[in-house]
Amino acid sequence: YFITKEDVKSIFKPRNKFAHKGTFGHALVISGSYGKMGACVLASRACITSGAGLVTAHIPSCGYTILQATNPEVMADVDSSDKFISDPIVLDRYDAVGIGPGIGTEADTQNMLKGVIQNTSLPIVLDADALNILSENKTWLHFLPENSILTPHIGEFKRLDGDASNSYERLEQQKQFSIKYKVFVVLKGAHTCITCPDGDVYFNSTGNPGMATAGSGDVLTGIILGFLAQGYSSKHASILGVYLHGLAGDIAADHFSYEGLIARNLIESLPEAFKQIALSH
Image 1: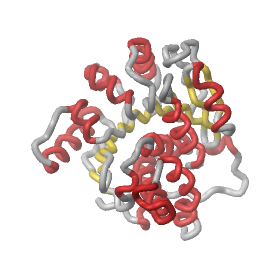
Image 2 (image 1 turned 45 degrees about the vertical axis):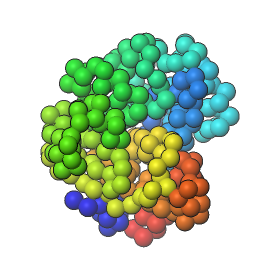
Image 3 (image 1 turned 180 degrees about the vertical axis):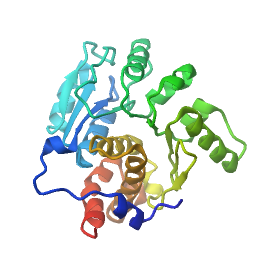
């Protein structure tokens, strides 16, 4: 399938006048390490800008001041470790969990990820270093909660599931991966490809080469997580996420050029992207 504006409008749920922040869910972003707190700032800001009612970020203690100063709307849950995340995380009070941007691959961080996978039935959004950890511990793929969402770029997908000789083979490989592990795979790139556990495939129609910049993927993780927290299914969260991420990129490119576009511009352009969907609903 090719994702169009009409498809997205049919999925999108307008807000009820009497809604409150509890209506739109509580998302947890597990992200950041020493030198990579920007990933957490971007993912958590994208999450709350995509409509989540509440967002908490679990971070190493070195990131506390950074997060509180840059994202006052996001709550901080601070790890006992200073430079990376190591603590077991209680997930009971959250509606959706995203993990991976900037977390690194320390042994204690790997154990934390294993605990998250094994101790929740919630669909998880996994990106970046969470995928790199999984690629080193492939047996853990069998323990992923059903309908989890993995958002690799091509290099991360190669590490997870091996190389393909051409794009057609890679598409089939991606589809079989989704079916085998009962997860959604959002393979990032031009016309980002979403494969589903039922074998369906969706190609995105928005986005541009200006989005090939550091942090763009962290923003996508936050957006998809925000939709999951709001109660969208994993399929609909993935479709809405990639379409609005690309649409925000197209809006940002009009303002900043392909070369000048940076990841925070995607978040700044999200409200305009929502207006194009919601106001034409």
